[in-house]
Image 1: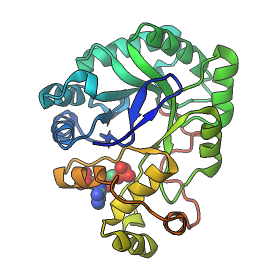
Image 2: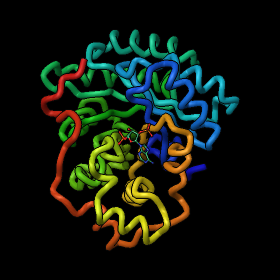
Image 3: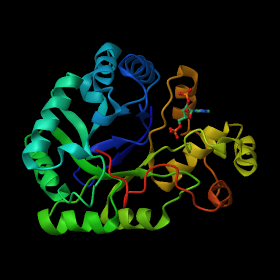
Length: 274
Ligand code: A2P
């Protein structure tokens, strides 16, 4: 099992987890069940992945006590707004078949819709009611996070962003560190890009007798970021969690990330995912 981070709300979050995009309900159920059997204690889904039912079934079928599993889901762009968020959250709980979620995130800020502060107020209420044990955001900029704090007094516990060796997000991570916000990494392996075949990453991996994926995930862990790699394959799931028994040197951390930045997913300033 993985170590945990302590969040700025006093709760804890496992240092690594399982991503579930783009698994359908059936594949997600099986992936979550096998991941929990392998020792994962953090599972990440979203309304827009369309697999909350499968994720919930996987948690239930795992036999792992509910209190020991951190389940994350996310508010979709089309449900921004105060009442909309409360309704959307209830629907998520219903699909998941759960009484609470451990981490509820705003999936995208949608700056042109400009309702994320209203959504955030609803999420603060859900946290107060104990229905969302921790609340956070995804794909937010420092300016948007600062606005949440200015207008509500509550900082997110987490910002989940695209982060991998092609997009190391130094400035954003420094902002998070300064404000006690934990960074979560989506597409931590660079989405099956050429990253895992990179020569420099291969050298680092060989030096530790690990796979390129493990070297990259260890890089996240040493940055203090929580990777949520998606894998439906039990052997790769185990591999991806087995990153707490070795450490990269400073030079190796730099070798893993030393390349021109490249975004693989949506740009938060322009991406309007509803
Ligand atoms: P699979 O589900 O067949 O394991 P990301 O999380 O960055 O989006 O990357 C997910 C992609 O990387 C998936 O296609 C997944 O495929 C693959 N993947 C996950 N873990 C590993 C691993 N340890 N080695 C190689 N590929 C992996």
